[in-house]
Amino acid sequence: MSDTKGSEAGPAGAAAPEVVAVEDVTPLEDEWLVIVDPQAVFADPKESPWGSPMWSETVPRIVRLAAAYRGRVVVTRFVADPGIGGSWADYYDDWQFALVPDSDPLYAVVPELADLTDHVVTEPTFGKWGEQLRAVVGEQPRMAVAGVATDCCVIATVIPAGDAGASVRVVSQACAGSSLENQEKALEVMRLFAPQVTVL
Image (tube, rainbow, N blue to C red; front, side, top):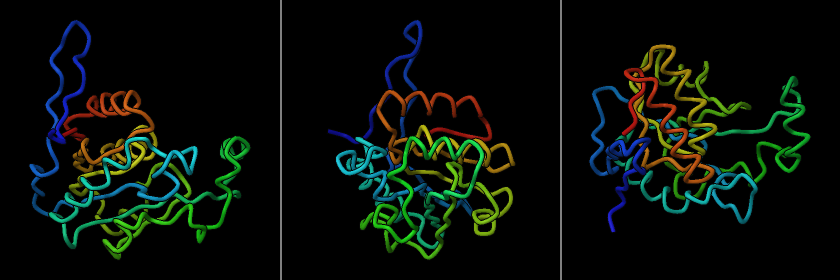
């Protein structure tokens, strides 16, 4: 069976968007690949309440995709910061399991991608578009984006990047949502931000 799967038809029987297999994604000139939060905490729903049920089938695709971007790959990490304040205090009242140090295995990059790049950006927020990432990829770069979770940290990275003038391609087959339904919802929202954002 092919890795390429179209989403279900939309309202009134609209045609499903065409999905591009990772093998058919060719890096654009000067394009970076940003792999969002490929960490243990998001990798296995049996080990973490944040684990994606789609991750196990997605990570081999990310490995294949990254091979085409050698030297131009950034891996991001999410690490909880109990001192961040504001609404995050309420958030961590609900998710106290995540209040562990950066060095905890929960926040380790998965073995398949751990040695992929020296460009690693760590942030305490869902979105990774900030000074650290811009210092690597530039202010208005071309970016291909993969990672987890599509409906949380991926979308929270993609939309601000596009809004800032980045040209972003979301490689849907290399993204893992918290569920298939939430994956499709997030992809549909990101499609609304064309031409800054293109969903492959």
